[in-house]
Image (spheres, each protein chain N blue to C red):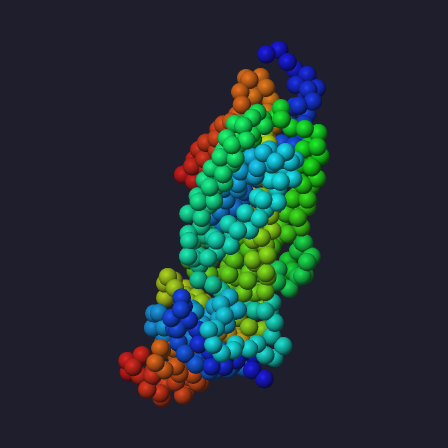
Amino acid sequence: MGYSISEILSYTFMQRAIIVGVPVALCAALLGVSLILKRYSMIGDGLSHVGFGALALAAAMNLAPLKVAIPIVVLSSFLLLRISDSSKIRGDGAVAILSSSALAVGIVVTSVTGGLNTDLYSYLFGSILALKQDDVVLSLVLCAVVLFIYIFFYNKIFSVTFDENFSQATGIRAKNYNMIIALLTSLTVVLGMQIMGTLLISSLIIFPGLTAMRVFKSYKSVVISAAIQSVFCVVSGLIISFYAETATGATVVCINLVCFVIFWLFGFIKERN
Amino acid sequence: MAVLKCENVTMSYEGVSVFENLNFEINSGDYLCIVGENGSGKSTLMKGLLGLRRPARGRIIYGDGLMQNQIGYLPQQSAVQRDFPASVYEVVLSGTLNSRGMRPFYSKKEKQLANRNMERLSITHLKKRCYRELSGGQQQRVLLARALCATKSLLLLDEPVTGLDPVVSGELYALISDINKSDNITVIMVSHDITESVKNASHILHIESKRCFFGSIQEYLTSSVSNVFIGE
């Protein structure tokens, strides 16, 4: 205790965490709304496990973690999308298989090459101390790309999410927009894993959207509310975890949970009146 | 030249053919009802006409300069839409997307088109309401307004009155007839309701696995296929 906000912000690791955390939270919330409505909620979770496997490989081969993880996760997201669309294997089963296999491969690779080191541990549970200057720059660039693409295709993403068949039938290439959503989600997941950890990143994607939907009724208001609330939760989570000396990722999720309960109650009362 | 033509079309569903060697063509301004029993392949044919599913054999040809992005479509409602947070205006406006190319935001013209179609279907007062909270009939009007925003020449409807009460269904049929006649938009409708179909349509396509019938209303009423089906 006894730190003022400005003192907290004078720490380099906190600055980095906020610089990476805010845009990642924004991207996660925006994409989350579409993923929830398309019934793809678990894809974020599956991709984070794939990300973990990729990072384990990168560590074993002494390569830069993000540069290995990003292409692998992007490819897996396309694969997951393909599988979800075919009726042979149900989508949720496919996600479960892929995510547990990737996690298992990751763990086997690390145990062969010398056990869990701190880097992998931090990817599993998230750590803001592990953020390096390079990661910050790359994260900012990718988040800017994600935000730009999302805003540019906002209306089409809405249409494809609301009614894929209609979009396809009236001449919009719905499949392409699904790919765009998958691509943006994979980037966000990999970036978010640094702070939130493999095990908790999917909550960053799912919570804000679901929370906003308790109260708001139009797509635009849901998206805006989710974005604001997601950024708020990440920033306050970072600050509270500093004071309370708790794990950052878990703190952010807990704050998201509190927000969800408040919104749910508010929506419940509003509906009754 | 026909707006839409099917040549020896066979559609299959998971490897089993639903109907075979279907031939028909419709011209600009026609109102075609596709009837047939459950499982006869009406919705499968609809997916074929929309280009969502390829025919196993044969060809489905768009003619008369018809492009995919000039088609309006009123689908059966999906589960996703029942809990989707979207305002009526957002849904209707999204119908204009197909003629827009890469431009990211809606223009004034597109907003006017959406407003005009909401006016036409008397749902302007619902503009700001949440789509999922509307009644079934109101939801269909919203989706029809969206389809009108998307179409310039051809409107396809998949069982538009399912689950609606007779009064609301009647209103919807009247609207569709009006769109067909006053805007000269070609209508293709899949329907259960043979009596209403006969009243409104100009042509009937009756699908059965053994034999399919295609012809004008007069031809249909005198054919043996209709007698069995209507039971007269």
